[in-house]
Length: 251
Ligand SMILES: Cc1cc2nc3c(=O)[nH]c(=O)nc-3n(C[C@H](O)[C@H](O)[C@H](O)COP(=O)(O)O)c2cc1C
Image 1 (cartoon, rainbow, N blue to C red):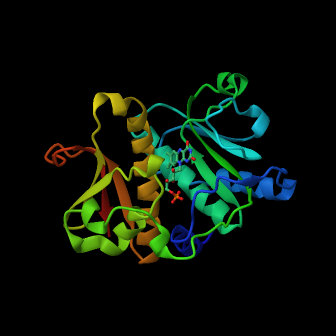
Image 2 (cartoon, rainbow, N blue to C red; image 1 turned 45 degrees about the vertical axis):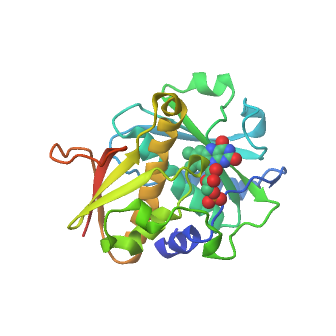
Image 3 (cartoon, rainbow, N blue to C red; image 1 turned 60 degrees about the horizontal axis):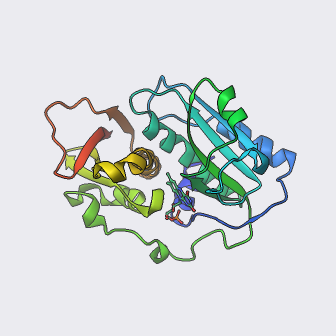
């Protein structure tokens, strides 16, 4: 899909929680599978496996009812959760751009047989199908999000960071904060107390990848290149209440 289509969709998408339960036709499903096989990773060298499954293959009562789901498995390596967020958000936008609804599912799990068949770690699912509610926001003001000032230390890249600001995140937690130094953006994630961290740290690392997916689409839209490096910056310390997950160079 064209970057301008991703860009336009980013600013109107929303999570869809009501679906027509009839399965999508074979042609549509095969287009989705072929899009999945071409997703761009954020971190290279991490094995992932994305499978399309149906309602019958989903275990949890914690999931919304949808005719289809994508299940993501990944090798557990440095940056893998953020990498999954970055990859699956491309699919969220693709589905929305093509008239289909999607919703990230942080609590849902696929059936045991599906999990045991994979040699990789189960990470997360995305529900999708034909929406029976409105697919898009009619106005950008409908994004309930923190202000731009709350997510960065200075205003140098606001055009790009606006795309992160409106990105989806688990329980709308918006865990991102950026420190800017020249063309370098330090990507920081909120630090939680140990109890909250049990569930939410995993989600927040995925959220960071979703934010970085939006950032890279916005950068491309302005004719810029984005390079992501996992936290290799021994000299940098994240602000109090955050931990650094890596940094982005914009050229
Ligand atoms: C990692 C992740 C997990 C999520 N888990 C759930 C979930 O279990 N159930 C649900 O209804 N929505 C879930 N969501 C959707 C968020 O609640 C939603 O993205 C957020 O409230 C912002 O709304 P929007 O997507 O409509 O912009 C999840 C989103 C993300 C990114």
